[in-house]
Length: 497
Image (cartoon, rainbow, N blue to C red):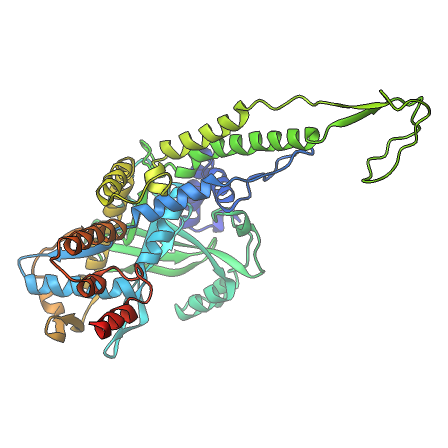
């Protein structure tokens, strides 16, 4: 049976072996458990409480929100400014249509838990491109464990000899695809359901319904023409023979949370958080156990004078003779106050070392000085600058891939309706002009919405205080939601005046 394996499956096995040697899946699954709060998985508590004080999730969510707090936009430039502007506007619309902002949140969470974030862009001939045009490119998120580089010691995607993408889908779907590609009936019958979920992340990946099969997509660059080719296969059947994409770049963007030397897999934020989270939970559990055992003092009584002790409220206890010195309570040993202080310090140091200090988390800051808040939050962002830069480079890689698709896959002109100062107007993405010039890509990073609101509100406060604007002008320009029913308030002021 081994001789029937496809070449792609052998490469897939090599990639899985590398992941196993660096404990990739085990670490990722552990981080995912801790994020969702399953932090006592596989632990025998031995009658200890099992509390979860999930600073892991809190730190992760705050950092992701903080990194994505600034609006992002892809801008193209070239000597043909009209075409560059048309491409920029087209990508801006696709950004909204394909919900890239939501995908970026998903990708950053992937990177925080697994160390990697990856997207795969492909051409869908059936998608509606608008104005009766069929076909457009689609970008999907892919788990890092499902991406296999030909050179695992090289993190540059475009320098890879080949790239594999693994996935699982319904067996019948793969059989229908093989039938459409004129694969023989005998080979189609060899496409069978399997239980190979070892390249899927999360404990629940092991829980599947029947009828799923692992498939592989292999990309490689043909040295003769410099174009990217792909093929699709299962363990023993080639579903799609080599296809020329006409692309110049691998359609895969890949980046890390923290890069590791000589490995395309990165280090996850969660990997450094797990030991601290375990310590906090265990110490809390022991403190809770101590309180449960010692919160109520134990009674000691003279059995020669009392036949049995009754703790029931309001009940009487019969005593033979004098009631003095019949019983007493043992004072339990108190818990060292340093235990709670240690837990607090562990939480504080953990959040600070991860770049999530009080300024970012919104704790212990008086909101009466906008300039001070902005300064503190900018200072808090410094430890996360590398994460931001990794994200911006990742988006630039995606933007270059999108440009590659536009230049090489668009075969008809596309009309783009944009909103301008003159109202709505239509610009044409002329595919005949696209290949004539080279393009540059950059990411435009706007001001953080939180900082912008604070700064603009402070400016409005000053203008109102100095009499340069009136109260109506002030209310009209306040960020939405700062004053309840602001419109009604403006109308009431207008009536009184």
